[in-house]
Image 1 (cartoon, rainbow, N blue to C red):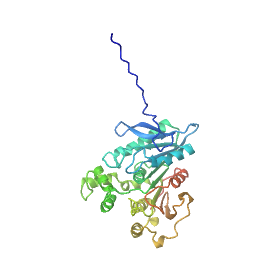
Image 2: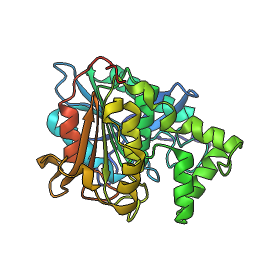
Image 3: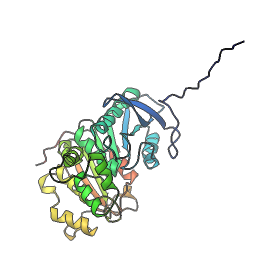
Image 4: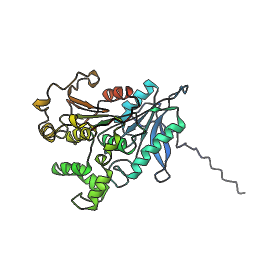
Length: 324
């Protein structure tokens, strides 16, 4: 006699998987729809249990070689759980070593779609949407500040890459793997007149950052980065200059001095406030201009989450200033 074969399937919903190792248990792994190519993309997501009122949304961005599961971003989630904020940490095509990643149009739309997913599935206060990232995440934060300035109430970018072609030259000279990552992303070496150089410019935050004049922007770098870290602090100082009023900009010579010596130039000494949110990483230099500020602290290629998150918490929507 033939008996019917019955299969019992256990369905694990893609929208509610357990948190990865190193993340708080309350964080869920989800899939969301990206309007870039109508694909399901991965992210980590948190919605506070009390949905009594709209609450801030923090969008966290992974580093250059990381992805959405990297545990170094867990402090962002812990802050959101404690403060009862919404949180999303998208993959935006993963590590920056292929054309689909590294500031591509897919990346931009993935991040914007992550924001839309959060707004549809959580009580988001649209006047308090914040963005945070370090290294490659700092690069993506600067890029998104320029590509979608109306969304963000505050953007905190740490040790960011401003210009991909410039960073390619710097990492090539130091024989670092990131030069090859860039080449894989843009289709070759970004030499003068090449399609690769045009692609590098298309994907660089420097191309769009001037459009971020209405965004509260916090740029930070450790003073020894570029010496014992991968991104020279000139990227942060030049990013500041793009948005700063002319009278506040830092000269090319002073930026060169900062970058080459890993010291604050003598003429700028004394321009460092005490800021307890940086802990033991003393602030060595800070300058504000309108809605943008740059901070150089005693450290390297790193982020200080309490400093970044406390600054974001204070930010409110503002009108675009006229920096001239």
